[in-house]
Image: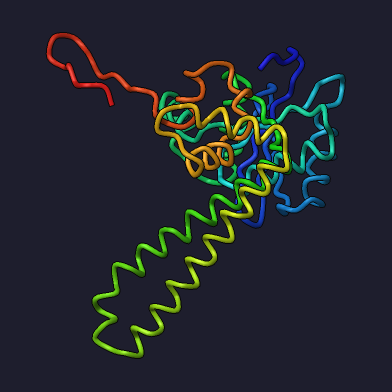
Length: 259
């Protein structure tokens, strides 16, 4: 991520209801810190606060840890207010190792925000690119299908216990049928969504040319990762997903297989 030298980094510690925002290293003994509600109004107030601190030609930029939907929603709100804003979502493991390397052990919302600001100022971070509405909808559908499949398996595994009671067995069968119908409805919605979007349709077809990748896996990959063209090379994709091999070879005694 190429950023101007006058970039002023702000770290954001994200929680369900609030965000803690702190300014990165700029020569002050005590970095400015402020708490805002995690709402669109709070996002606007955060940007105004940051703009006041970034006077004199400095350019504000924001970095936060990946916290599921909360961080993505906040990143979308920030970019919705300013399209040219620099926003990054860092992998928690990288931030953890960064803090450990520097001996930073304090764990508060304020300290986490300061740590993230320092991380953004000193480490290369990948800019956040919002998913298109079609990808967002596909992700919601595939995740709901996955959750229902897991619930269906769990219900099926308890069938033997339910058979001891006719009432329990009847309720279980109705629940199983309801889950199957919901899964079928979701799969139909996924097919309609993909067929109605030329970009999704093309990628869906291309992914299934890979041996072992069928419709469910292809749709899930697209929903979770978005446009795969955002990754500059295969290694970046493997690292993002968490399947890149890790080696542990040292000296003459440590020769563990990669995992």
